[in-house]
Length: 90
Image 1 (cartoon, rainbow, N blue to C red):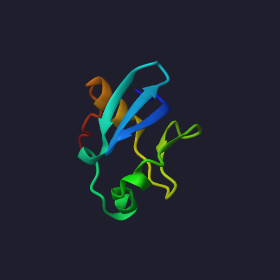
Image 2 (cartoon, one colour; image 1 turned 60 degrees about the vertical axis):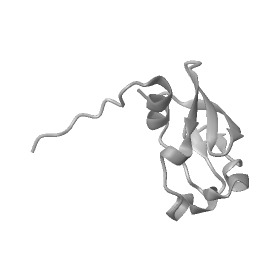
Image 3 (tube, rainbow, N blue to C red; image 1 turned 30 degrees about the horizontal axis):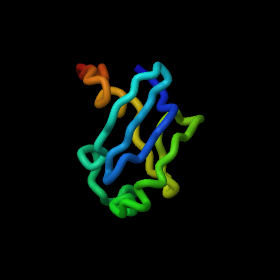
Image 4 (tube, rainbow, N blue to C red; image 1 turned 180 degrees about the vertical axis):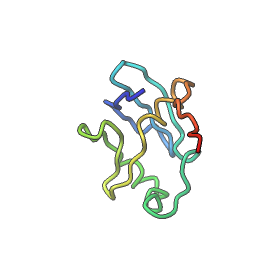
């Protein structure tokens, strides 16, 4: 899939509006993706969560404390498409 996030807007609470490089736009509720522990613990404060930005080199969203989310997961949530991971056979 590999679609970079090119724009992010905090729209309230833990919700973000994302735009991807192919102009797909959609909303994601990050609280349904993560538990606010570990690197995500500071983001439980909405004011800290709202500091989200796009990291142009990584092609995804990041926060000042270094937390980030996989752009493929975000794209799959916005579009309803599968990530395309297939199990490996041993």
